[in-house]
Length: 215
Image (cartoon, rainbow, N blue to C red; front, side):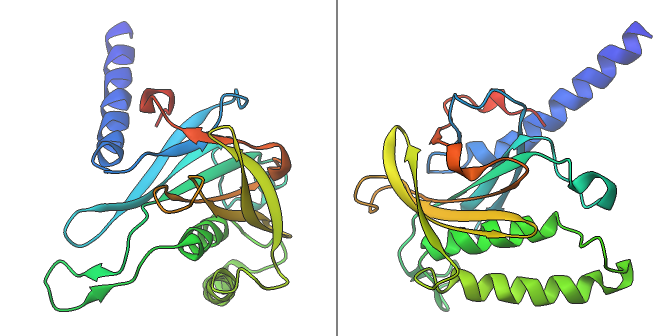
């Protein structure tokens, strides 16, 4: 049994290491909740361009969310999305251009991330994809209109500096988006979403050690 347990532990560690590899390839700093959060931390996944350049990724805090109806009400989690600040640029094959990233990019990734872990309790499972498609389109439209009435301003610390975020709530959780860095030019775009944890008391900081994030 001891040998089996050690083997399982080694396999889990190897899986965590492989997942961290994508984060280590990024040319920008990753953000998570600051040291005031003392709960579990875990890696999610990164998003890369066609040429392999890491563009964005997410880190989780609290209980890993599911779409199980029976657990959603008790779930407490916050996910932080980091998006590389990129100008308009040529595509890898040279045939076109890629859009610049922005706070709207972070808001879209956060909004769609929350939807991925949401299951309306009153809905039949066979209808979920239609619901998800509809809500995803709404999330896109909301992310493209950060000055609209659906959003409020929320000041939260980023690396200890008060930073404005666009913030909205829904029956499924909350979403926010902003930019790190005092002038917004040299930082990264930040998004976050969560459920069961209040966004009002959160703070964000650069992750110094990815080893603190398991999984």
